[in-house]
Amino acid sequence: MSTRKEDLGGYDVIIIGGGPAGLSAALILGRCRRRVLVCDSGQYRNDAAHAMHGFLSRDGIAPSELRRIGREQLQPYGVEIREVAVADVRREAKRFEVTLEGGERLLCRKLLLATGLVDRLPELPGLPAMYGKSVHHCPYCEGWESRDQPIGVYGQGCTGVVLALNMKTWSDDVILFTDGPASLPRGEAQRLARHGVGVREERIARLEGRDGMLERVVLEDGSSVERRALFVKTRLEQRSDLARKLRCKVTEEHGVETADRHEETTCEGVFVAGDASRDVLLAVMAAAEGADAAFGINCALQEEDLA
Ligand SMILES: Cc1cc2nc3c(=O)[nH]c(=O)nc-3n(C[C@H](O)[C@H](O)[C@H](O)COP(=O)(O)OP(=O)(O)OC[C@H]3O[C@@H](n4cnc5c(N)ncnc54)[C@H](O)[C@@H]3O)c2cc1C
Image (cartoon, rainbow, N blue to C red; front, side):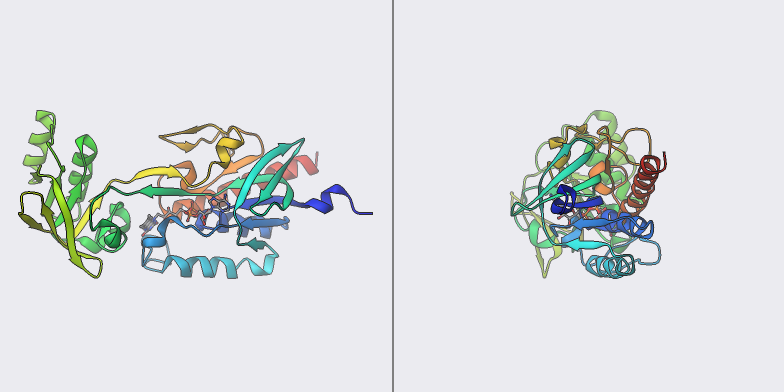
């Protein structure tokens, strides 16, 4: 007679999210001979990007290729991967019950949230087609590719000032577009001027270019400013509300918060890795956090099994 555990699955770990964080954790946990399931709804944060930069040994690789290699290298370890969204999670005694979209329910001992973030873009006509090609949010990802080019920065208040000054690391020709009165504190305006950053306060009508490549920023007064790249600050939101459902502490600033060790959240047995926990938002960091969480999860399982 089968037990309830078998009926419902019974994994050591269910990893929710199959980006760099989730796949990296799966690799370590698979090698620890854990029974692991990765559930992935396939809405990767960097879907708009053609190449991923700054990942040791994989600089410039297509994000989909990194994931393909990552999945391929899980095969020897028997990690299961399912293309499915997790609709709900809840604690059930010492386990977690995970409900997949479609209603199937599975049990696991530990949960890893590697569910990532969503970028909400500024509402500028023309921007969506250029995002990931010539409009970017991350200087570390695309600053080098825009080096020595005429760069625009879109942003208001101190956020815009900081991003504009940061871009001076990659180009001498930086203009800050505030899309309305800049209303900057005197010191900040002077700082921009001292470092040769121009400021345009006119409202923006649209971005113009070809094949996703920015050529100019057109202002509402009819004038335009030639630029080859625009860096913007995006508004970041959790891709998933599962952490909140589990009552993990989640803040605007830090995302899903970790307690003191190896990416465990404020909710015992629930770990978080990658962008969802909002440290440095780079793929290599997501992978590193995935490995750290896997280490924490395996140690926790060992403590339970070998007490
Ligand atoms: C345009 C762009 C360009 C970028 N370029 C670079 C770069 O050049 N270099 C770099 O280092 N970083 C870059 N980044 C950042 C990088 O994409 C992230 O740091 C990285 O993807 C984070 O990995 P992750 O695994 O945490 O999240 P993700 O890669 O976003 O993966 C999260 C996964 O979880 C899944 N998921 C969410 N909720 C559920 C659920 N309920 N059930 C099942 N699955 C779920 C999602 O569908 C997704 O597949 C870029 C980001 C953007 C937006």
